[in-house]
Amino acid sequence: MKSLAFPALLIGALEVWARTTGQGSDAIAPPSAALRAFWGAAMDGSLFQATAFTLGTAALGLLIGALGGLLLGTLLGLSRRAARLGFLSVEVARPIPSVALIPLAMLVFGFGLRMELSVVAFACLWPMLVLTQAAVQQVEPRLLEVSRALELTAWQRFAWIIGPAIVPRLFVALRLGVAIALVVAVTVEIAANPHGMGYAMMIAQQSLDPALMLAWLVWIGVVGYLINASALALQHRVARAMGEQVA
Image 1 (tube, one colour):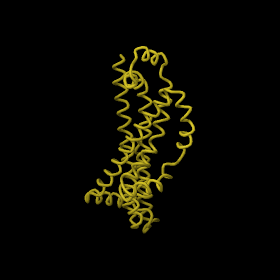
Image 2: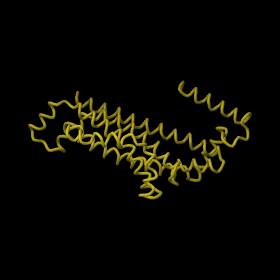
Image 3: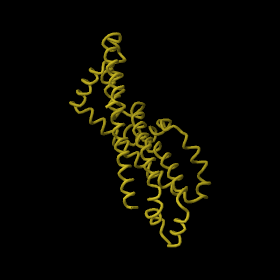
Image 4: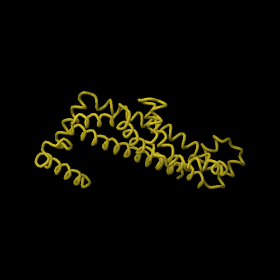
């Protein structure tokens, strides 16, 4: 409960300021008004519709980016030759801000789901690739020698040896990817895509409705917190399960 003290104090201070000095502001609304606006959006269904679109796009983009990063990271981690050949391409493409791809994605896909999906997948690809590559490179070499001696296929080698060894690093990458996916999805919606939570917040701002804009802003933060907490709980559960299997 102590962790709630500062947010509660901040909300109370904002409520007082908005009803006194900042009364009539077109930029800041009292939290009580934001709560009423939030309830209105929940009642008319716009809250859940926009949230479902953003979360669905973020999840699908994360899945595509994570699978691509997992495959490429495993390849680059196992093969020094592939790592040397791909080093320049990775290091040139990785620093490109994902939002810089919005104009190109709009030309290729137009507005809508596919455009946002491509930008989110691009953003999620790189942390998964880099962390997977580093994790694979740290797998015990003797385990790989055993897999070669047993003449395991590439899939068997990954499923039985490499995969279990890199699971902790993968969850770190996935937690990072979850946060990136939500941030990028909302950013794309604010900048270009007329769907989702980011677009809803922009419409509230353009309509000079600071209460609704603040409600969406807080809701996006709450959604992000819940997603991160769920990913962390899943990570701990998998770690415990693996520990019990080892024991």
